[in-house]
Image (cartoon, rainbow, N blue to C red; front, side):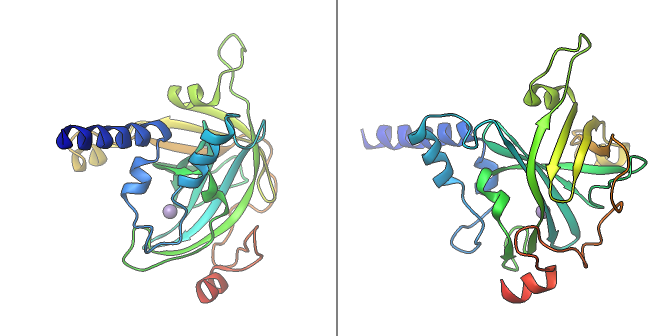
Length: 231
Ligand code: MN
């Protein structure tokens, strides 16, 4: 009896994890140690509110600079209640000539878009996080008959176009999947993770690629160094 109810509690919990897509995110982190959001509250609010998308028609995006074991940018787009995420080693460019490698990472909770601070050393992703840019985006993907395609579907198909309305990044961008190289195949036992390219598809605007050491937060105006000192 006890065993049975224990099991059903467990399967309820795993069903919940499946449902909000954040099981991988939570599994990597100890929320007693990191100040990153668990996403639990946002999930409860959505259940209680019952009005689907927390932010209405506006879909949010955030680009964070993450000074971890290697400096990189994290590019996140709101899709179906979570932030779909890519790690972009060189960062997004406003120059259409630049094709930026974007490696998929685990879905993050929506409230991660406001997260800025220091993840303790030794924890997953230990290092400083800055909200470099944030705003909303508009999906612009169409099929061959020029009918609009949902953003989730566009990602599924491996090519998604969108218009960013950020404080720094503005205009048309595209994310396109391509297959991993042979050495990636070998290192992951033939099961290579797909890699994507993030490309500016409109006219060049602004100054190309930001220098993460000089960049300032869209949220607080601080540099990485100031965030590292102040937490
Ligand atoms: Mn990161």
